[in-house]
Structure formats: C-alpha cells, structure tokens
Length: 175
Image (cartoon, rainbow, N blue to C red; front, side, top):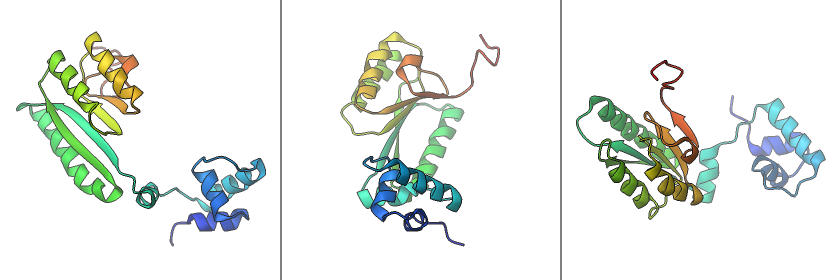
C-alpha cells in the first residue's frame, strides 16, 4: 500500500491541490472551512508531509554544522564517526552535515569558531559547549541570523540555545 499524496488529500477534502498545499505548508489565504476539511482529510488518510520531496521541489538543502572538540577522546571520536556516517545517508534527503573541530575546553577557541560560523550559511548548529558569558554574544548573533543552536553533550548558556541534548546533571544528582 502506498502512502497518501497531497493530491489524495485534496480530493478527499474536496479542495484544489493548491488549497491543500497552502494548508499543509501554512501559507495562509485559505478559508477556515477549507482548512478544517484538509485537516480532516489528513487525519483520515494518515497523510505525512514528505519533507524530502518538498525540499527537492524547492531546491532546498539543510546545512548543519557540529562543533566537536578535536583530539583523541574516544567519546568525541565516536560522535564524529556517527555524524559522518549519518551525513552520508542524509545527503539523499538534501541534508548536509559538517563536523568542525574546535579546541577542547577553550572558551576563546570556541568563541572564535562560533563567530566564524556567522560567515557561513548554516541552518542549524550543534555545539559541544561551555558555560561562559563570552559565548552569549556570538551565539545570539547566530540566532539572530536564523540559525538554530543546540547544546550537545556539554551545555551552552541556556538563553543562547534552542535545545540541549545530553545528561541533565541536576536531575542526575551530579551538582
């Protein structure tokens, strides 16, 4: 059985393809009655938006960067390998991932690396961070540029990032 398409949703909702597309992609200029019909059709058909197809039609590529400490640390080497392995598979989904090695546990080096990202075109950045006020300004500049910032393993200043992936040390009883 094949997955339902946007054409199937439009047909089931009794609206045009363009109207269904506007509802699915939140483009506005659609009557509430039509929005309700499209949402009902989506739910009944089990339609799931194919982000890869949407990106392909728009020529959109998501560019991600991962700032990982350089060195021989086995844990960070494993993370680096996983990112590179996943990047190879995500290329078909129009997602690129670049590992950028930074000096381990050096606030100034991390600050410089984050500032360097401002000159490049990334959609999201995951950073093995450090808790330092010196990082707040370059991280805010990235956010202002529309780049999603995520703390990875070791957190960043909370106000400077959208999310954190790692152990909550307070909940784990380590602080």
